[in-house]
Amino acid sequence: MTFEEMKKRKKELHYTNEMIAELSGVPLSTVQKIFSGATKYPRLGTLVALGKVLKEDRPYRIDENGDLVRMQEDQIPYHYSRDSAAVINGKRQGEFTVEDYRSLPDGPRYELIDGVLYQLSAPTTEHQAVLFDLAMAFGSYIKSQKGKCRPFFAPLDVQLDCDEYTMLQPDFLVVCDPDKIKSWGIWGAPDLTLEVLSSSTRNKDIVQKLRKYKQAGVREYWIVDLDEHIVITYLFGEKTYTGIYGFESRIPVGIYQGDLTIDFNEITTMR
Image (cartoon, rainbow, N blue to C red; front, side):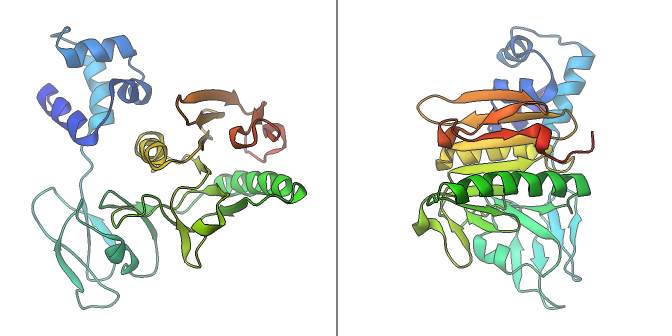
């Protein structure tokens, strides 16, 4: 990817310099100098690191068997159906709606973000073990307090923006407004969302979902990184407060003003 292509891709993805620095490991000051034009000849290693973050995701199409397959980025329309007959034609990534999402064949799970479909990989055993323990910890506290909030975990549809172009499936979520809880899923922003990173979702969870959750009005977002053994928390409001904790930490839950803390020593991980 050339530098001009990087700049174009940065604009398309709505990435900030801070996001790129966090994802690439390149110092923020260096990223700022490169994209402002102050540094005209970046080091090769720096360009490679930036290129990995900004690489173009080739779009998908759904074949006659209902499988989501990669395709080259030309103008080939997307076709998918529950059987052999195509039910939606002439659509490509960026144009899909919630109706299209709900028409997908049974099988692999997907998320819809701003009209783009993403296939979700099956979780690992460690992912599930961590998620189960976290759900138990949150759920036990909520039950003991006889609170109005309700915990949920994937698979569960969350129509985050209350529009027709985004449908997410957070790994875990807490909803305190009962009017948002529908028979089919959640209508609107949960109070807390949590994602356990995997290799296939890392970029999406750290960048796209962070942005979407903040914009939609989610109050708190947790990212559990099993590779780095850390938990990153974001408490959104007039200011965003970020915390980074090791797996040996007791982590305060912001929506409960710290009355609830999650002791990660009691969370099952394969360290």
